[in-house]
Amino acid sequence: MTSKTENDSSVYQKLAETLNKIPEGFILTEDGTHIRLLKWLFTEEEADIVRRMKLWAETVEELSERLDLPLPGLVEKLEEMVNKGLVHPINTSTGRRYGLFPYVVGIYEEQVERMDKEFAQLQEDLFQKGKYSLFETEPPIFKVIPINQAINAELVVHPYEKAEEMIENAKSWGVRECICKKQQGLLEKPCSYPSTVCLVLGKKENQIAENKNNQVISKKQAFEYLYKAEKAGLVHCSMNVQSGHYYICNCCSCCCAIIRTVSERNQPFAFVKSNYQISIDEELCVGCGVCVDRCKFDALEVDSDMCTVDLQRCVGCGVCAIECPEDALTLVEREEKTEPPVTVRDWMTQKAMSRQIDPSELL
Image 1: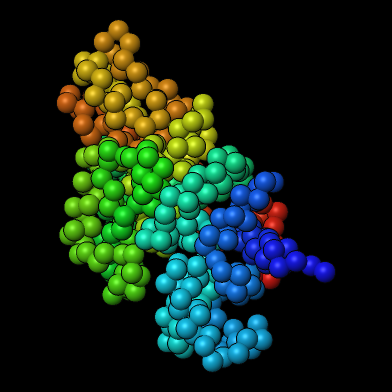
Image 2: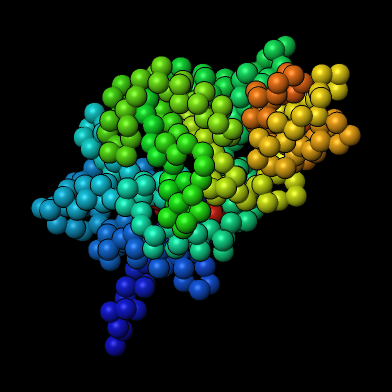
């Protein structure tokens, strides 16, 4: 006879396999850390429902019929999962729909209110056991967005490389507490940077208000948050696509899982592939070291009263340049440039091919 514990684990293992079929992937550990994390997030009933859901959202009636679940009470169950950040709700002209969330960016970020010390530790354990898997396949999920003020004024900059244009083109705006900073704080590794800095961008008016984790702000306020993050020395990052950006993270190397990992590698540029690099005007530089203190990737050092740069460590964020008292640093184009996928769907297709997975059953 199969025990209830074994049945529970089987449901959670199937959920883990479903999440790993999403192009973004999910870390599967040999010691079962991923199962313990999923048990914190999901009840057994929730796990059994979500493991059978699709990426492209369905109505409650469609889910009831396909999953052979009784319609009465199903909306309440789904809305409870929405409230817990476990499924993705979409309001359409044909009614409210529910779909699978990737674990990152998705389920994890939605735990900003629920997260406690136990979950923070489970997440850290999961990250430590699988952090380098984030960079094993192309394309990267994150793209560093250069600070516009730091870019050489003679350069033509693509819209997807301008945080300002992402904000300008949105129809609604929000800000939320950084999940990474909260997680590290719960692990008694508090961050000195501002914590409410994650910008959320809506393609429709009033869209931001649909998520309880978002604080609705104006476009003007979104720019203010952006410039506050720049001044503080945080790195702008967003989805590695040319269009359809729905967030701008403002990241530090002490908390952000991706920036933490990149900064640990000997060649951060190889994993970020920015189109920019810092250039130092030797006639203006006085070797004051302000830029060295601001660099998150240990790309700069002062030698003989002159700042030098390791271009394999520079990711072209521009955080160093905007506080240089001599205006000796600017961002210039790299000789080798890359273009991100055009849309989120293109990114998912390329990622699935790179990971050699077939997510068609989730569509």
